[in-house]
Amino acid sequence: MVVVDLYGDSRSTCTQRVLILLEELQLKYNLNKIDILKNEHKTSEFVTLQPFGKIPAMKYDDRVVFESRSMLRYISRNNVDIKDLYGGTDVDIWLEAESQNFYPPANAIVYEKLFKKWSGNKPDLDIVNKNLEELDKVLNVYDQRLSLVPFIAGEEFTIADISHIPYINYLLKCGYKQIFKKYTNVYRWIKKIIKRESVQYVLSEEFGKQEESEKQEQIKNESIKSDIRKHNSVKSLEKPVKSESTEKIIVKQNYSDTSSSEQIESRKNVRNKKDKDNSKSRNVKSKEIHQKLKLKL
Ligand SMILES: N[C@@H](CCC(=O)N[C@@H](CS)C(=O)NCC(=O)O)C(=O)O
Picture 1 (tube, helix red, strand yellow):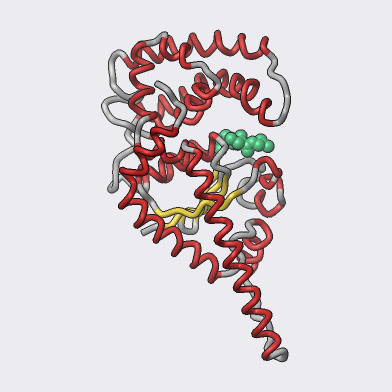
Picture 2: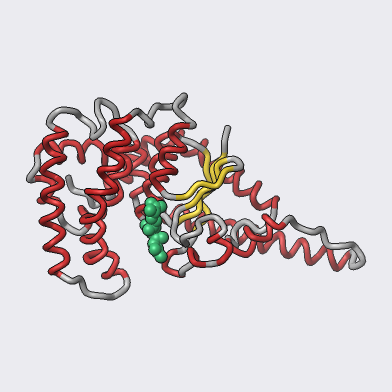
């Protein structure tokens, strides 16, 4: 089974888009945190994966893929045997509609109302209002579409639905439930897609906490290993230090939680164990998360 190395930040909408798909397919993946607030996406090492210095990017087997919507297409196309979320032309149309029509006003509003707040700045309400009007026009079209089909690309849930979710979530967090509620079919669609287990899991604050505790565990392991290494090198000072491959050095500099092949292995093991535990307790956890989420739909 393929293991995906995703590089991103679970707070970023573009990363969330990919995370939801990975969770939906229950694929194994490592989330290598690129802290957007610390500008880690601008390091020369990260730019070797994503030349524009934006998150996310991923290694899927030997292939590096960036651009979140292309990542959705790539992952789903390669996993239609698990679940066909790739679909056909209608999926392409509505993925494009999301990127060209829904995303621009949604992003402008969320940027002003949420992202600026996170960095201690005030929103420009003229920009917000102008884009709310634009979004309203887009949702009017969506409502007509969704009066014909249950999901945006047709009868089934697909990556076209997934692509909308992160901004819908942040718009709800900004308090714009009413703009969706105005459109019955849009609102019905949103309730259906946002309540999916994979979506609840990725959008929950619990997910971020879990990521953080995993990182702490890695740091702890790293320090134990470093103590063992120090101890060994004192025992045999003349022993040559094993050289690491260039790739590992890049990983080490950039993502401090994967400092050697053993640690990468250990991370996979942690994830494997977590995956097993997750699948056992997922239903219970999903219910708990659902209760904690402030998305009152
Ligand atoms: N079209 C790209 C956009 C990537 C993007 O803009 N990512 C944001 C986070 S959602 C980012 O890295 N922003 C920081 C920056 O542009 O410097 C994609 O979908 O992957």
